[in-house]
Amino acid sequence: MPVDLRIASYNILADAYVKPEWFPDTPADIFQPQRRQEALARRIAGLNADIVCLQEVEPGSFAALQRALEPHGYAGVLALKQQGKPDGCAVFHRLERCLGHRAHYFKDRLEGGRVSGHLALVVDFEAGGERLRVACTHLRWDRPDRPVEQHQGMQEASELLEELVRREPESLWVVCGDFNAQPGEPLVRAFSAAGLLDAHEGRHQPTCNANSKAKTLDYLFHSRTLQAQPDRLPELSDRTPMPSETEPSDHLPIAARLLRA
Image 1 (cartoon, rainbow, N blue to C red):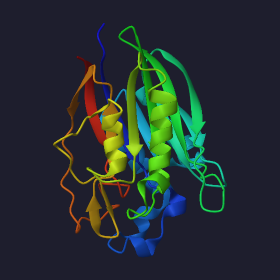
Image 2 (image 1 turned 120 degrees about the horizontal axis):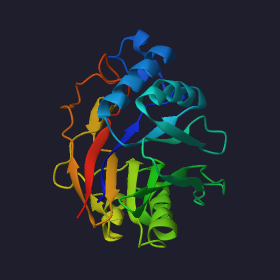
Image 3 (image 1 turned 90 degrees about the vertical axis):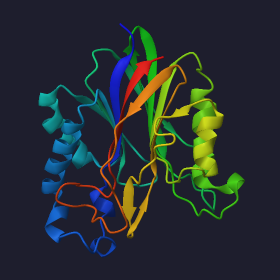
């Protein structure tokens, strides 16, 4: 069978990073962990995706999502960041053939020589008789005015592309997550320069509302031999409360149908 699947990416907002003063328009009870976990599970199940890549996932949230998504046919894997960070990346899927997974920890160093602890979680599947490699990541934020060669997120993106994607060009690739960069910035352009296609190219919408500033920070890139049919997102503006009654994170999930070209 040819490749035909739905894939989604979603920064679910770790409880450890919730500071009520950052979300003045969000009622406090919405941040109650169990309530948010239940809302996240409903939101994820409603995406009807074959593969769901999540960022800012804490162990407790992962366990709760496992319990809630298992009846929908999903299995999941979690890889935590290092350096004492409370969260990591997770991938849930309902494909029959999962070939394994590994966590790639970036070698980028912070000022003072300490490594960042950020990672890309890579999960391999057999899809349509081919090897599909899915890399889920949360690239580190850095000041936009920092020189490109010193930019932490750019260092991580370059390592991901050089050490993973370019070393296995024969595989089908999907690289997705929260890139902490906006369309047109060097970090985002690096993925296109590496030969990947942006599923939302020409159709970007804001995916996050942090500090009352709607931004596009989440991306889904894929091999050129795949075609993408991206979902349209709910409208999001600077005045849209996030999280809210209907959106349990300060990010929206993005999703697309991918087909073999």
